Length: 134
Length: 134
Length: 134
Length: 134
Image (cartoon, helix red, strand yellow):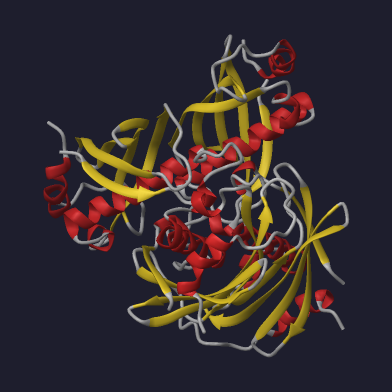
């Protein structure tokens, strides 16, 4: 089941070509993930309690068509892999259904102090499962 | 004696009007101040050692002419007031000498843990004095 | 009558001190103004039709308390001066009513091509008047 | 022959985890590419003259270790494919030689007005060839 977060493109996120600068889509992925955390756990703070944190280890995107200032866009997230210590999320950005950007982002769960890899806590896994595909 | 830091305008700092978005000038002030810290102390890390930190309490700017992508601009800083717990810095952004933006930024020194106001440490004051006007 | 736009602080807008970096508040002012344009005119595109555009000539803020990641904040705008070619807007950022930041931003209306100052078009003035104080 | 651009991590590019936020690395790639344009052509303006422009169609990165505020990092670029209408660039970010981030970015050359794909102009190809691998 994909999670969808709608947001509005901000003026300063667009560059002199008049379109959203490529790097900002990775911020949009993060903003949408924050909302997925909220839907699943109440907040990111609840994800990272008990000394757990989460870091991005990989990110990528294919840009098919540009979003522009004041566009309302839907950022879709689907967890395509929920591993022992990591998760991979497929992302899509649409405007009125039209696919603009497809991406993927991989996170690893770590100990908040040592940053060593750590198993996804059971309560976190349970909260994420509804957003996992297959 | 003003401190000058030269930097190059980045593409993504410019908006669909083709000019640097107003908020980014405040980032430029911060980037230049980081270089002033380096000139005065070796690094920001040296400023904030011993449990001292510094926070921005006021910032303002007047925009006279726009900077554009790939422009080299000079960010000038002059400490106009070095108080007991705070400092005020006048900023100017120039391109080939032409004044583009004039600003000001006020910082307060605080305890890094409690964030309570704190006297500027003597070693910090000594390092900043060469950049203070009058 | 102040205009209020609520937004959520994004993770990447916060710095290593754990608080919103000062420059981003100026982006928030712009985001809220875009929503005021929408309420008054349907969109910014409608403001700047007929060869009119608007540029920021002054901006400032006083930072009283920090906003943090995931905070919901209200950005309030009140047009304090609606001149012949320019407007000044008072801004306030609150969290649960608590005043975090107070600011001001001055815009000038210009010819979209020459960027020369231009009288505020009558339809624009009419749309803005409900948000003007006094 | 890889092209290398050194830059300094800015405070506001770091997030509450104290490290560079992932999206900013894609901006760093763009900043370095601007410098490659400069080395090859004098400026980006010279690349996109004659009605040519360039757009990003794909970007990705693997994050191995974090960069932090005030770090000096080297952004390396090597053009791994110089096609008829597109180019692919491998990127690496290092600090004191240590590999922090590996990435790739694909650009397509387009007509600046219609945005239709367009052959890389001969003068552009000639300028880029010294930075192409194999």
